[in-house]
Each structure stands twice: as structure tokens, then as C-alpha cells.
Image 1 (cartoon, rainbow, N blue to C red):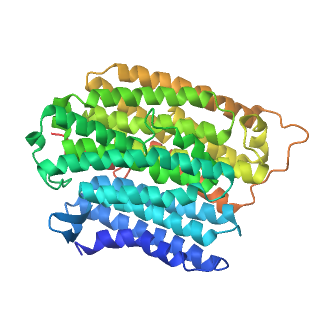
Image 2 (cartoon, rainbow, N blue to C red; image 1 turned 120 degrees about the horizontal axis):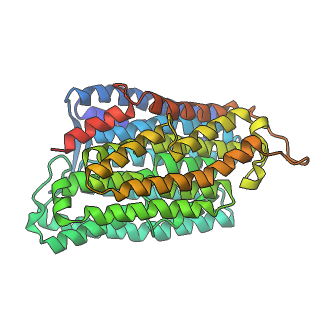
Image 3 (cartoon, rainbow, N blue to C red; image 1 turned 60 degrees about the vertical axis):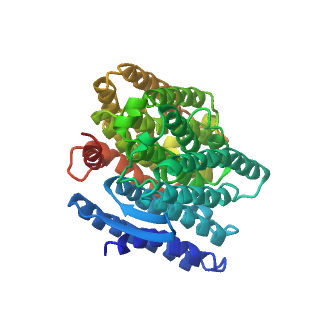
Length: 487
């Protein structure tokens, strides 16, 4: 089964996508079962593979395309951290999207690209070589663009154009970096790093910068983040997908691979490129929070919050100390759970109460209590209030900063927590203590298809914090990964 399982786990989202495109619009049951069935099978495969990887078993599949050029899918602990998150959140987002979109237009197109997006994300996580990573990285761009422009209105089309305007130059930078590096070293295999010292320090630093630029677009690093807030023109399920499951996580995951599997921690430190990246991530954390404070729309505020929060992952990866690595890796999971909860709730507020702006939130907690409890849990986690998962990530990142001899990291985390409180607490005050105007539209939570995913991800965000010390928690798996990379 060594070569079969990586292909199967990719096929769980690829096959449903290809079948869905052929379904007529009225075949909503078949469409739903293909997506839900694929997500369920993927979760089962992930659980099995986690047991295998924890016991030291390796699974990989290779497809030779030409002499010296091949695709490699490999399952390792880092792969499963990302794939397990995407599998669970794909299931939740599919349930949510079915209820959210109802009987709207172009649903076969939407769910086809929706599953293709998850397939591209899975392939990117499974990639065992740089070329394989690049192919799936580009497929992710191509499969998410139709989702961004799904509404086909002027705002969505503009957002789609901006997304490509940022993504395509980033892809070009990434391709130049890969060609430059592999022309000197041969194919770069993640688990078997070659000797990069055949290149000069200046060349390696330039290649590192091109890599960081290429994947930094999707990670929404400053100043490459401009596309993300505008992409909020997409439907709520797409926003959830972009922020928690696919695009921004793919960018952060790419930077983790760059530091740990392409250059290696030792060479990254020797070249001195880790600290500048950490400083850029720290600036992005603060910049995103400051911009979030200025937003009046719920989804725009959440978008700038993502710009800030994803850079925690990059900060931990760049610092490369034991606790920092664990904090950054576990935040990849924790941020996904918390942020998707917030976007699920934002979609519920919009669809069930007509709320899109922050000044419309007054009193909604009494009219939509379960949605508001879930939103509160997500917001508390983003601030870093225990026992929600976000506290665990930030605690480890703070320890990691001190361990790496960079005490300024603690100051950045403290400032970020204050800024997060500054833009989330006023929202929570309005939700629970504000008074709804007399002419407020009717609100209800009767859409279980939208409410249940929000409750499930909010509960997962809380459980990941409460049971962080358990043997099967995200923190435990992040610690397993860190032990494999650190001396």
C-alpha cells in the first residue's frame, strides 16, 4: 500500500470534483453525497496514515514524466498536519456551503472547483519535491479564481483580477527560484536535502528571497496582502475556504517547507535570512491588526485579522527554535479552526439577519445566541484568551522568542493581543450588550446546515486548547514534527 495511499488521499477530492462537473444543476443530492463522501473517506485515510507515520512507516508514490523530472507524493508528519486540517474543514465547509447556497445558480461549477481547490491543497501538502509543490501551487491559483468570481458581479470580477495580479507575479518568482536552484543542485527532494553550497551565499540569499516572495503572496505577507481583503466579495463558504483551508495556509505551509525542507534550519541561520523574515512577519502581524481596527465591515475586519494571524505561523518557522517551531506549526491548525468559525458566523449573520457591518451587530446575541457564542469563542481565541486554542499557540511562540534570544517577539505578541482585543471586544460588546434598533430585520438560526458546522469548529477550537496536553492533540503532533527537524 506504500504507493497507493498517497494517490487515494488525493483522489478523495479529485474524483468527486471531476464527477461533479458532469452533473446537471438539479442533481443536488448526488453533488452533496460526492463531496461529503469524499471528505469522510479522506478523514478515515488521514487517521490511518497518522497511526502509520507515528510508527515510522513511510508512504510515497512517484510518477516519472521525463528523465530527471518526476512527481512525488509523500506522506510525512508535516503533510498530515495540513491534510488533517483541510479534511476536517472541507467536510464542515461542504455542509455549510450546501445550506448557504441552496438552489442558487452554477452549483455544479461551484462545487466542482470547490473540490478541485481541496485536491490542489492536498497535492501541495503531499508534494515531496519542489517541482511537485510548484505544480499544485499553481493548480490552487487556477481552481480558487472561479470561486472568487462565482457571483459574477462587478465587485467579484474586480476581486478576481486583483487576485491574479498578485498571484501570477508570485508564481513567476517561485518558478525562477526553482529553476535557479535546481539547475545547480538537481531535483530538490524535501526529505533528502542536497548540498546547496554549490551556490554562493549571495545566490542562495537571492533564491531564498524569491521563494519567500513567491509563496508570500498566498500567505498575505506585507506588502503582498492586498488581494485578500478584496476577495471577501466571494460567498461566505469561499471566504472560509480561502482563510482557513486553502490559499493562505498554502502560503504559510510553503514557507515552512522552504525553511525546513529546502534550505534547512542550519543553512537558514548561517545565511542570516531567518531574522529578516521573522521581522517581516512581525510587522505583518501588527500591520494587519492596525488595518483591522479601521474596518467597518465584518468580513473585511476578519480578512485583515487573517493577514495578521497567518504571520504567526511564519514567525515561528523563521525563528526556528524548538518552542517557536511548535508554536508556529500548531497555529496552522488553531488559526484554521478559529478563523473558519468566525467566517461561518459572519455568513450566518449575513444570511439570517442581513448583517454585514459592525454597527449592525447590536443585540444580535439575544436573537442568534448559538451563532454569537461560536463567534465569541473564535474571537477570544484570536485574542489569545485561555482556554481557547489561540492561547496555546501564542504562549509557545512567546517562549520560542525568548529561547531564540529574541525577546522582542514577546512585545510583538503582547501588542498584537491588545490590538486584537481592540477590534474584537467592541464587536462582542455590540453582540451581547448592544440594543437592537426597533426596525432591525428578523433574525433566526433555523438553518442547521449552517449552524452545525459553526458549532463543530467552535467546539474544536475550545477542545484544542482545553486538551492541548493530550497525546492526540494538534500540539502533540506539532511537537512530533518539531522533534524530527530539530537536532
